[in-house]
Image (cartoon, rainbow, N blue to C red; front, side):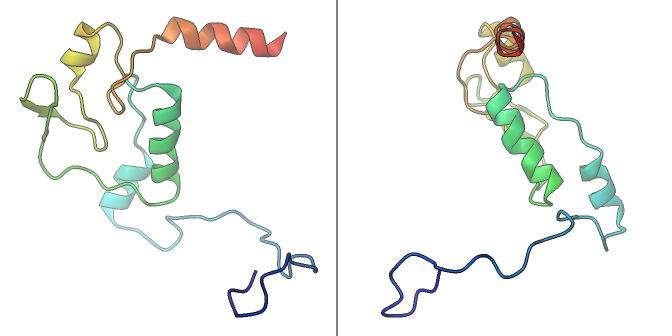
Length: 120
């Protein structure tokens, strides 16, 4: 929809061009840093929502790895090795299953039960 003055109504025609292939962020990039990022596995210490956000960043080339360890917001020590995390692995396990990115409590067992209920 155009932002030009007077074109505030809904769009009346269909989309002109449709993408035939999905975006490939590493199409012309051959450096070792990009290859390392594309082979990353999302941490098990994140809830499904945060894991999806991080995986999207990896898939579309928006992921920026840490240059030095980050500081944990709970224990105040520099133990965070993965980007976009706020809690270290020790604090996530001691805190009773906290998400390393958003800090909310969750457990892997609850996620498995939801998948089973959706299938039936």
